[in-house]
Image (cartoon, rainbow, N blue to C red; front, side, top):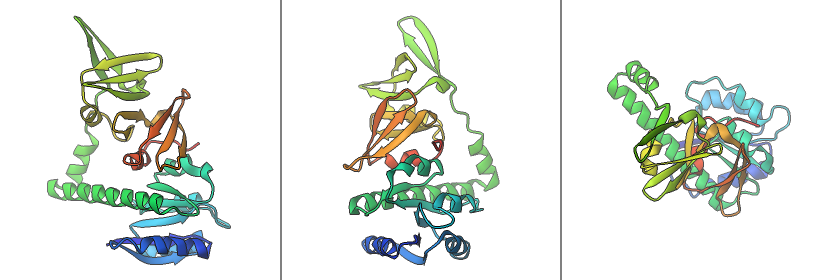
Length: 256
């Protein structure tokens, strides 16, 4: 069972989350708090898997509360707020998702699906560490060497493009196009293949045909369709499909 904690100063908002969670047979609500201070105490005592957290609360807001959690394996966070101006900041602190009030059932279910996927991934990593020898496995994973450049062939000519220079990547049939500033290069590779070769703390797939460098993300907004838009530092807007939306909250996005 997924252990959920609700932290919101508004009783009606907490009730709304409870109603939504009634549809989730694999989630149990282990507690509710009406302030960040009370929430911090409950987190330490109850060890929830996921927290449904209001952004704006009297005294300490949700972001400040998160900064005070001292845990090597912190709970997952779904932010709840009536304001859409906090979306990128929420992902900057590695929230799983960001749900607007009043809560839309479909958006809530999408966020909960992302929580389930994140917990499955976390459990898989734990099992891998146990199977391969805890600290030793962790060290081997940390030492994984990601490519620093990709080879580009054009006829008999070979050149390279640095991974640090890549802004985003687009699927182009049997090829992918690497966009690096004003430069574009095509390489013979599938999206699944190029994704496996990129550090997931620096790059995220946001659509079946699009990968972005997280350091280039400067804006984020939700759409009525439950997709989203991100804005890159060069002003380009790219669509984030709801299937992949949880991935951009993993790591690397900077808070505004």
